[in-house]
Amino acid sequence: MRAMAIRLKTKFRKKGPKTLEDRASVVATNIWRIAQETARHMEKEGYAMGGDRQVAAVITEFIAFLIQIADRIVYGQLTEEERGRFINALGKHTARITSVNLAEFVGEGRYAEEFVTTLNARLADYSEMEFNGRDPSYSVLRYLGLKVSIAMEQTDSKWVLEQVVDIEALEAIKLFKKAVGEILGVKVA
Image (cartoon, rainbow, N blue to C red):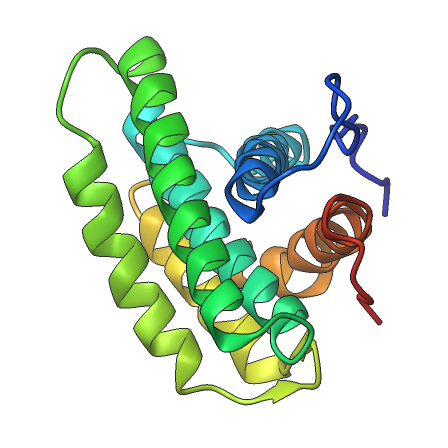
């Protein structure tokens, strides 16, 4: 397994205090980068993507997954009010970033609404699943793998579920936890 080569932003250029919303913006940027790099990595590993819309669907699945991971990381480390503000801001920022990026590489369109609908559905599903502390259980990883496999069903997706469960999700989590820990100053283990 070759690790993803990606540089994540964890430092702020401007000095001074940062709000949870400021931090959520940086976390959202990193979520987009990790999700995009995961899709690229899968292509490099021989998993054909059937066009920009399919890439966007795969990226969306990883974004939803990583937002859920962020929620599990901050649970019990932020107050419920702070946690709600952070996750809400994270959702808004990822919707904005996704909409801008999809308009750029898929073409003009109204992507935010569809993205938010998918995000809300996935977060509702993930919230019902079991986690091992801050780490996803096998059933959570398998659910992500299934959703990515469905997103890729127009192309050869025979081993997509296994690739996601065994390699892509674990690498994404490792990168993401490190970034969230540095940005928010919370424990990730």
